[in-house]
Amino acid sequence: MGDGRRSVHPGSEAASDPASAPSIALDERSRQVLDFEREAWKLTVPKQRAIRERFGFSPSRYHQLLHRIIDRPEAVAYDPMLVRRLRRVRAVRRRSRTASGLGVRV
Image (cartoon, rainbow, N blue to C red; front, side, top):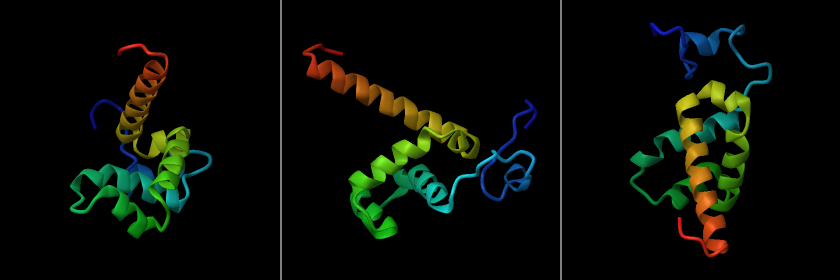
C-alpha cells in the first residue's frame, strides 16, 4: 500500500512479521470468529445454524465472545476495517436500545 499502512490479514507479509505483531496475539478461536464474521454475508444457511455447526455453541455465546474480541487492540490490528464496522454497528444498536427504553425516538 502506498499510504504507509500495512495489511495484517492471514498470509500477508505483515501478519508473519513478528515486529509488526501485537504484544499478545489473538488466539486461534478469536481469529476464527473474526474470519467467520467477515464472511458471514456469504452464508447460504441461517447465521445461527452456521454458528452452532462451526463453533459448537449458541449464537448468544458467540455474540458475547465476538463483543469481547472486538474490544481488544489485537483484533483491530488483525482486521481494522471489520472490527471498526462491528464496533459502529454495536454502538448504533446500543444507542437504539437505550433510547427506546427511555421512550425516546432515534
